[in-house]
Image 1 (cartoon, rainbow, N blue to C red):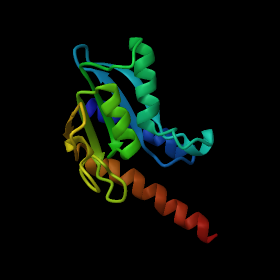
Image 2: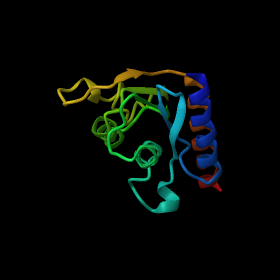
Image 3: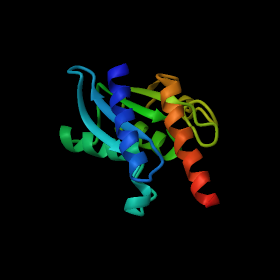
Image 4: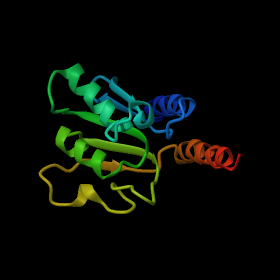
Length: 152
């Protein structure tokens, strides 16, 4: 588990270095352990509200497997998914959602709401708090630096 979250954190660091909110995600084919999709936040650079780490990773995984369903897959993400990303996870039929830091403002897997417990046609298993401190630290540092830059 830590191996995949470590890779998601590396992607979050790339986002950080690009001035994006540092969130990274990887989609793993559970039967092989292979990472089949990766993504990092790219909303600012892409000027696109849809350019969340999870959406990019899911898109890449669908292209890798050649279909919109991602059976026997797990997604590892450094921050609890928002409602849009939870919807994409449900639609892609991803089996497991593993996230690091909880998002008390827009997290929709466990914090603000528990979207995966609603009566949708598909419900992935959710595990939160994996490498939570490391995932929270990069976000805290990003927003700390952002506040400093705004004061200058």
